[in-house]
Every structure is written in structure tokens, then in C-alpha cells.
Image (cartoon, rainbow, N blue to C red):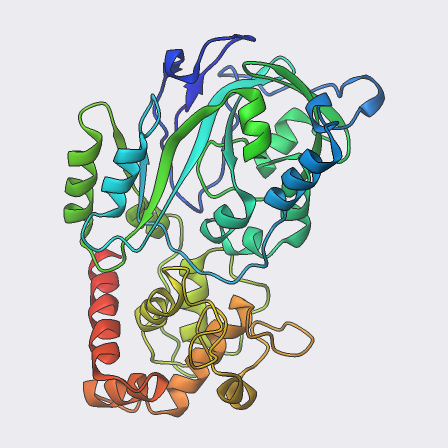
Length: 398
């Protein structure tokens, strides 16, 4: 992924006046620090005294409370697998965002700010997000890292592992971030940010203070739409200046092709690091012979639109929408985790769904057995048809 927006020094220019550049890369791939070619980065010195967040955070009590409430991270419940990254160098207008959301088959869309600014003397790519909504779009391990989101929602900046290492960032130290203004900001922690060559992440408040370009890019999830049709729809909205990255193919290329074991697998050690891996490993480890695409389709239908993470009208909860009574029977700790199974935890919910489907005969042989198991998951013929349709779309696209 190339540079978002180039900004070489403090400037009072509005975001639309900044010189644009293309985002490239994909969800799930490693970030690459944007430094001079041919040499490693020197360590970035912390601001004198290791000061705290910017002075703009010292506001009236009521304003501070409002900011704190806006920044507070929600618990992670949703699973969203992004299909396209779209970039409008001058920023997406509200009308363009609405039109992108109305493309046939689009289930989720999130827009975010971005720019290339200075961290000390080094150029870095930074995006600005609402932590509680952006959390569902990042790699699964990052989404589940509460300390990461606490840091971000507390007004600190977080960084990719590559940027953290190259810049020599120290947790708790403050660094000068220079965009339209200069701010001394504490470094919180590091984790994979899920968009290649994005070095740092800040919250929406700090994004405004630094003058990042508003809504410079968006992620789109449309699991039931072919890549060709989705790209054509986005191109019609963005026009010739817009940039589009196919994340489906890049997610696949960043992971090894799953293999089918000859016998039921022993649950793997460690946790999957992406949503795609979560579905793949849950199928392989907890329901040998079940296609991961079925789990991915159920995850998208059950919680992909963000409106039914729970409780539903039937009392269902979590990313795979288990009713508590069903969860009491089938809920398990996935991937070697300890403690009681958590209906809201994707690492537990997805393996539990695989286990339930298996017990209901999903792998007994033939399409009728699979359809019957899906029907047992949600007693509706339309639901079975939609799951199978989305699963087939995943199989084609991946």
C-alpha cells in the first residue's frame, strides 16, 4: 500500500489541498514503514520528559467527558471480512459514501481518515478511526486485544509491529506527531493494523487535531457479490481518480491454502490471526470435512450487518448468534483457551458453531445432509438457501 496523503511539514492547508497518493495493500498483510529506501530507520527520540497527550485534551470537564464517552471502546462482538478497499485522494463525500453503501449486496462499509504525516523526522502513514466501529475490521488477534483498544480510545497512538521496531517506539513515551498541527502524543502499544503500509492508528479526535484527510478511504464488505461486480459498482461511484484494492485475493495470497487432514484434527495451538484463518481452522479442527465457507457465510449472515450481535428478538447473542440455551449445550473454549466459553468471543463462537453443525450431520455426506444441519442452526428455508449461496460465492472468490 502506498502513501495515503503526503504532508512534509506543519501546514494550515485544508485536507483537500494536500497532495494525494494511492493506498495499496490488503487486510491482514504486514505494514511497511515509509522511510528512505536502502537504509534502516534510526530510533525516533521521545519528546522531552515523556509528556502526555496534546494540550487540547485539557478541556472543560463536560467536553472531556463527551470525548471520553465517544472514545470508549465497545466490546468486540462482530466479525466483518472486508472485500474491497477504496480510496478517494481528496476524501469521500457523504453522497459517495451513501452510494457505495447502496451497491447491490454491500452489507457493511466503514470510512476513515488518513494522511502521511511526520513522526519526529520520519514520514509515516496514519489513519484516524472511531475505535468502537473500526475494531471489527482489523485482524482477529488485534480485535481481541483489549489493551490495544484501551490505548487508542485513551487518546494514544498505536502502531504496526514493523513501525514500532523501525522507529524504536517505547510504550508510554511521547512522540511529536506533525500534520496540520504538532502534537506530543503517547505511544500505546503495537499490533497488526490490517492495512498494508499503514504505520499508525489514531482516534477520530486526534485525527481532527492532526488534520488528516477526512474519509479518505473506506472498507467494504459484500460477501454475496462477485469481485467483478463489486469493483464495477465502486468504480462507477469513485470515478477515474478513485483507487480500488481487491482484498479477497490479497487475503488469500497472504495465507497458506488449508489442507484437509486424513482424520479429525487436534485443535491447533495458538490462535488464528485473521478471520479467514478462524473460519478455516475452525472447520478443519472442529468439524473435519465441513467447508470453512459455510462458517464464513453463517458469520456474515448472523452478525455481518452489525444489527443483530444481540440480543436478537429470540435472545440470540454473539458473532454466531447462539441462543443461551443452545450455547449451554454446544459452547466450547476454542483453540486451547481457558475459562468458561464466551458466547461473545469469536474464538469460542465459531468453533462451537462448527461443532454443532458436525453433530447435526453436516459432514454425513451429500448436500441434503449439509442443508439439514444448516436448517437445524436456524429453522428457515430461506436461511439455508442464503448460507449455501454465500458459501458458494466464497468458494469462487477464494
